[in-house]
Length: 391
Image 1: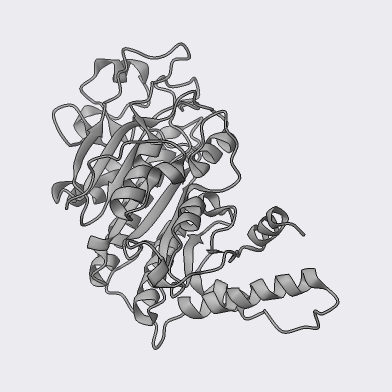
Image 2 (image 1 turned 90 degrees about the vertical axis):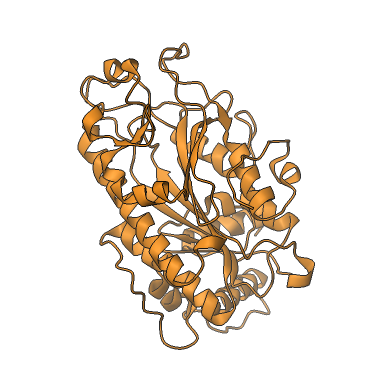
């Protein structure tokens, strides 16, 4: 069994723990800063998330689905948030929310599968890479061996930016993972090297599980977590961070997923409900991190495979588009609007927006300014980090 086949098998099992670890002394500093990625699966509509309410082209392009000016949560004289994002307004007012507008990449691909692959491998649109951008980061600058894993994927079996060899664990929730990990058991393996390899990995998974378990009683938060799948994922993420603090076996990053944002029809109600889940989940996540005194050492970053078309379709929805905003949150985030507001008077030949910020500049900000790594080697090119963080 080769490495690629094994990675694929591990992902299908819902767990993967692969590359060897090194000591903290051998690792670059910075992984004590936690990264939490939130994937908005299915392509979030950026124009109805961060609303250019003062642009007359916005209402004319979307006569049925435009957010009414009087409903928008105003950020400045031209821009506001969808009303369902009310729970994020304290972030904005405390200058802990940066909104990067116009994020995309050259020659955008509007296939869900291919575009998310581009985002998660940090490739060019015509370049095919098998390893995730975080996998390359952790290979170049390994996470300390004391850490339970490089990262944890919550609510999905897709390893995404951790594909291709990172020490990654994929789980629906902590309790389910621990129960699954206990299934690993010794067996006669001398005549079956493939089985021996799989059991070795199972043993590593048990070791990771022990790191994710609380040392004593399970941490009980004062924070009230929202109900529903995303609220459960946020609670699991908080528990993993708390357990890492308790055991001294943390992880460098976590990824949560919320979907589906593929709103081809009847967008208004569907999108409003999803954004409400996002905002309330992120507010609870911040509250739990503040309880643990980890908010200042955490960066939360949203991403989606692409945006939606500026013009609404005949089904009161939006079709696949190009650019969209990204939210960046944390106690050391320098809040405000970055990038360029969408220019709805200058659409491309397909009726889509052109990008203002390459998504790899956002990744370079994480790698260089958050973790202190060499982004140009990991991203295979020079991308200028954004001014997102306080000193």
